[in-house]
Image 1 (cartoon, rainbow, N blue to C red):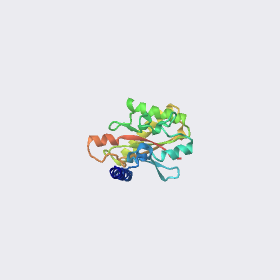
Image 2: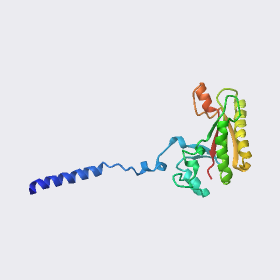
Image 3: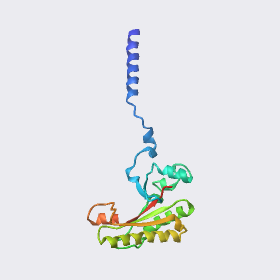
Length: 197
């Protein structure tokens, strides 16, 4: 019997040792904040004229500088970092050749206005964009009108003028590169970009 126990014991040790080598560390997978998300990158223009990038990962640095808790998984966490919050919607779409804000867009703008008025240390850049149709000057003007329309709604709801910066890129920064209605619709927008401090 001693001979049959020894091979079983050796086999058990080999199996356990072999399993230990193939165990994958899933601690990063359990923490969504540690995973890369290319869709979360947005460019902000710094107050010194430099470009700054805010992603889901470095939004924590922004929060720490302003004393805000960015962990949306705990009570009182920042809704800007919560994909289930309306504040995660930061693009306002417009109809062709229009700066009129739709009712659907007003709900998104109102949510951001409420957040900004209750967080006066936060600032946003409202970037106006257009599709490729129209002249460069016309599209720059239309992009500005769209951004101003969003800004006016925010100011009417209590956001301080100092918290809002308006900029237009016209047709120069499309997010869809096609030459069809679907692409044009995606490019007619205002992006609400929270500035890094």
